[in-house]
Image (cartoon, one colour):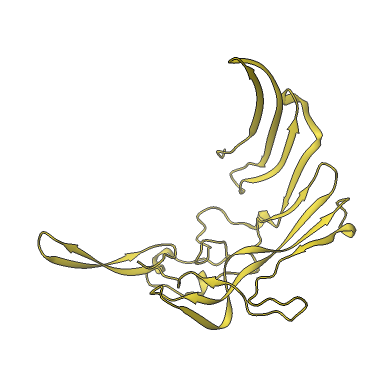
Length: 231
């Protein structure tokens, strides 16, 4: 149904002649019109496609993929990430800070990679947090604005990585923790976020077009269904 990579084959050629296929990597997906395309597993086999080695399989688990909406649901934030809030298309032209386009931290992880299960039986789990910023570049791109409070931006970032040698919940141990803070100090209270927003949210911009043949200047308004960077 979807265009996707389904296999990688390694074949041996000598002097331009095909000799043998000695390795194949198979990709398995959730592949139905009613759901998002998700990679379920990668299987590594030898010689022929029928010889898929079940003990050499990498499997993938995700956070609540069934809760993602259909495509073109009009439920996305300023940056195009799902926020579970519907926005009427005809309001985009005048809306810049509408609450229906703000990020929703409670649904940002839907569909994100949760666990990798290795052929050995061990696994790695990823824990995420939303992007946060307290500073942003101003509209003219010549300075930094500091907000009074931290704000959420679209998307997520890795917060912690856990490993389990057996794949059991009780055996998970934290492997790495990531901190996104200014002037970070170990074991100190959470500091100010290091996030900087590239530009203010903007759906409409005014620009001028000059007609050099008739010495005329036109001012037009450009609108977008998605937040655009100012011209």
